[in-house]
Amino acid sequence: MTSFMTPAGLAAGTTRLLEGRVAIVTGSTSGIGLGIAEALAAAGAAVALNGLGAAGTIAETCERIGRTHDVPVRYDPADLMQADEAAAMVERTRRALGQVDILVNNAGIQHVAPIEDFPPEQWDQVLALNLSAVFHATRAAIGPMTRRGWGRIVNIASAHGLIASPFKSAYVAAKHGVVGLTKVAALEVAESGVTCNAVCPGYVWTPLVAGQVAAQARAHGLSEEAVVRDVFMAEQPTRRFATVEEIAATVVFLCSPGAASITGTALPVDGGWTAH
Ligand code: NAD
Image (cartoon, rainbow, N blue to C red; front, top):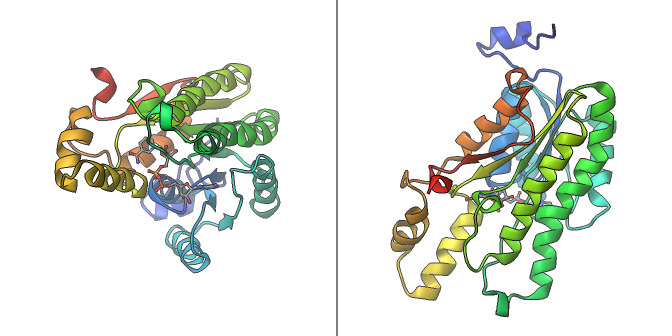
């Protein structure tokens, strides 16, 4: 039986369940992805961060996470709108940190508009990043995982992977696609020790949601507080944003040995939204 508990982990008072594993978290320079990268590092994994942002800030983030959790951390600059960049990111990570054991497909963008006015180029961009990049990264990482007999693919979908809201056609279509792709990947590798699951957050307070709140407040002449209370929290029965830490803890659990039989799922972390 494999144990990932190490003397270093015990000394730190944690189990460091992912000690020695190598993880990529796409879109981890901000928001949910950054929280997931931190949580995986805290569990002992070496981490490749990815996403947009100022070089100095990203370097500081890598240094801070590596020092805090005593794991290797590197930054990969892949622009995942470009189809071939996902595979290049997986290969660069393998050369720098070792074979990729954990792939968290998290990078995503939003565009909100009625279908009639939805710019086709925005549709293409949302689909490219939120869905196609998940396929390209999975395609590059899944084979070596199955040949080594262990792997975890976690796709950050959304409550909008399970239900719809108006004006989010590209996002809802992409996230439903991610849930479907998750099931296909899970079935293809089910006997190999590799699992693939989707996490479906409700609203989480991050720059992505802050931008939507500000835009709705402007569009409707309301205060941001009113938009949060009457629009966003109207959907979420707990009446509070889920936290980045709650999403990250779910991802760490799905990567842990105890989750080995959980595969092909779309797990809501949405304060009860999809229970409606
Ligand atoms: P965010 O805007 O804070 O972070 C998005 C990340 O993606 C950033 O690191 C950004 O640099 C990166 N990114 C953007 N374009 C990229 C590109 N071309 N290539 C590589 N990386 C790129 O957003 P967030 O709220 O943390 O969202 C993260 C994921 O969670 C997204 O997939 C989003 O759809 C999903 N999600 C968020 C919420 C929420 O309420 N915040 C709810 C459900 C699902």
